[in-house]
Length: 206
Image (cartoon, helix red, strand yellow):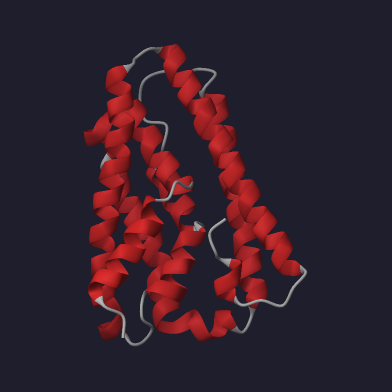
């Protein structure tokens, strides 16, 4: 049986790793500050729960028997992250102050983030809603704390250095990071096409 300390440690390690969602949190903190960016945590939580709860309660056996579904989801996620990278790059051409990350973008990016499938398939014990919800609550607590940390890191960057040129550089760096994340997801999906593998293997971190 999974222990709470072991589960929490795994969740913190997974959520703290840089990825598409954390990149957007950092960018929002850098461009809009901590207070204005805090609403994005709700969108992130909704994105994760939209995947984690159905998978942990209902879909895990179905997905594990059909790895092509996971491959398709990862390909769609890679395309979405690439689109967000394009939007950030374009925004870097006119880096006015203000939010550059919408609630919709945060929700969809998190919804398609492979980390959500890892949590639902691997970390949270499967079972009924009564079994899953306590673990999901612990996961959400860790999510909030780590999201605040990423936003705060971006906000500190904003405080330390201001000006349009800095925002341009940050937008461009974030866009490049997202392109890399997209490439990793595509490579993982492409590799999975050539071998017989499980869903757990497909959604491993790059």
